[in-house]
Image (cartoon, rainbow, N blue to C red; front, side, top):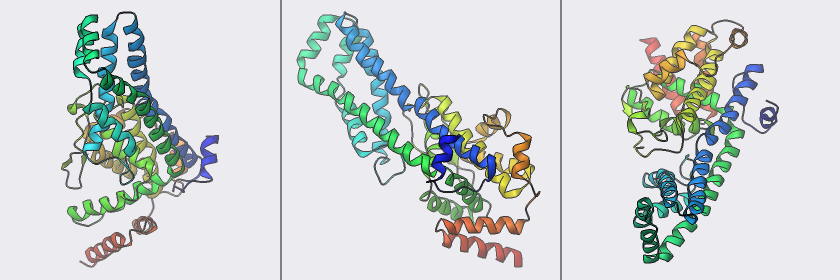
Length: 355
């Protein structure tokens, strides 16, 4: 909490006030410790044990361990390579994979020494030696990619975390801007287009908690294990991720709960001043972002439940008037430079009112 309050000095502001606001910001920032340690850092530890430990095991005549480590390393690199194929690396995207990391990930996949790994898996030391001396330079260069790739993973994670620690509270305003668009009288196609415009203003926290980690294939899982977003018409949005990621299910559950329980639900409570309306909106928005199964799990088994005194702190004056809610949402859209979207929503609302 003390560290989080220190970052508040240089961070954008949220909407949630008082002690609950401080707790919300701290929980959001703490998520950037939980997710890397259950994702890329955990993967780096696996790769370290697999490659360095495997080389030591090879030295004492146990090649199978190195083979297993190289297969695991392939998974880590393939996850990055998939992002390259989808154009999701570099400064033009909001995914925490730098161009150089993507380049090394692709090289690891494209030059993977399959014959050498198969020889290791056979357990035959003479076959391993033959496979190595058939292309000694290529295999040696391939192993040399490992320390560089690992350093770039750490660099990408550290850079993303540093940025996210400073813009965490702004995720509260982002969640309310999403709500302003989804609950507006605009047509579904116009809502989806407006949400795309809004995403361009997304803080790194929301990218990580809402658009990135929760929608990947979990480590050790399959495509059937990943969750999907819905558009405003209720249709599934396919993000084309099919390769198992480095994030385990715990990291994904934490990201989903931070996005919905900590950021969205508390912001909705502050906005409406009514617990029932906030919970209904929270359930609907969670189902839109991550599907009905996740919404049901969070409703039944919340990771970050609010205490009665916290709810009371967020709803001191009771339910807010609809006109006041609309005015707040309009102002938040305009703060993000989305004046055109705010104007269209306002015109549509006024037209419906006159009708």
